[in-house]
Length: 326
Image (tube, rainbow, N blue to C red; front, top):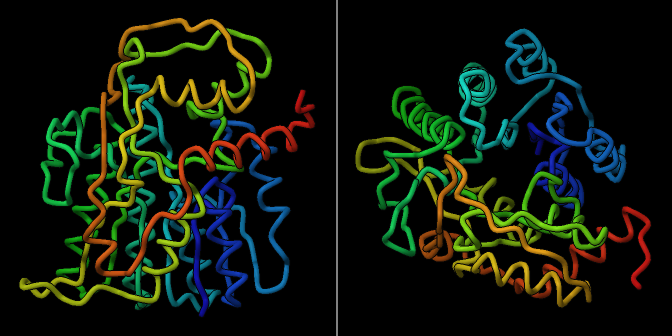
C-alpha cells in the first residue's frame, strides 16, 4: 500500500510513518519544517526512519503546484493528513497563518485526493472543536459548533469540507478528533515538555487558569495504533449516502493539571516554584473523551497508563537532551 503522510516530521506524523514502514507499506512523507519550534527535533525524528520504502519531499501543503506534482508522480492510494499549524494566539496575523495552512492546505490535499481517486483520506481534527463544553465526557454528537480558538475553528472547517467532498464525490474520509497527545519525541511547545524542561533546570513553571485545568491525555503509541486501525477501513456510506465518519480519540480519563505537575515532580524527583496565572484566551478549561464509538468499531483500547507514559517521556527527554538522571 502506498500512503502519503503530511506533517511527516511532526510528533505524530513521524511515529505514524515509522509504524507504517514496519508494516511494509510504501510511505511518502511531506513536511515544510515550519519553524514553530526547534526544527532540529523534526530532522532528528525523520532520521530514525529507514530509507527503504520511505520517500520524503520538503513541501508545503499550501503549495498547490507542489502537491499536484507529488500526487501525479506517486501512486498514492491512501492519505493520512496531519500537517497543521496549532496555537492559541488569536491575533489577526495568527488567524491568517492558521487559516491559510489549516484550511487552504487541507483544501489542496482533499482536492488532490478527489482528482486521483484516493481510496481513503484520514485527517486529524481536534477535541478543541467542543469549545468550553461542560457535559463530560463528550461524544461525537456533543456540540462542536462553538470553538473558542482559531485553531479549533480551522479544524471544524476541515470536518465540514470533508463531509461535503464525501457527499458530492463519494471520497471516503475519516476525521479523528485528537485529545491531548503526549510521549517521546513530543512537541516542546506543549505543557508536559515545557514543565519537564523547567523542572530539570530548576526554573519556575507557569500554570495557567490557576491550575484548574484538566485534560484527557492519550499516549502517542496508543494514538498511532488507533490511526493504523482506521487506514484500511474507509467508512461505508451513511443514511445520506456519504462515506464520512468522525471519531474521538482520547484516553477517556480527565487528568487534573496539578496531577500532571505532581506526577512529573515525583517521577523526576524534583520540585520547583509554581507561578499561578489567569486563563489564556482561547484555551478550554476541561475535556474528556467518550471514545466508545471508535472502540466498538475498531476493537481498540488505550494500553499505556498516564504514569507509565510520563516515565517513558522523561526517559526519552533525558536521553535526547543528554541529561543525567541524578
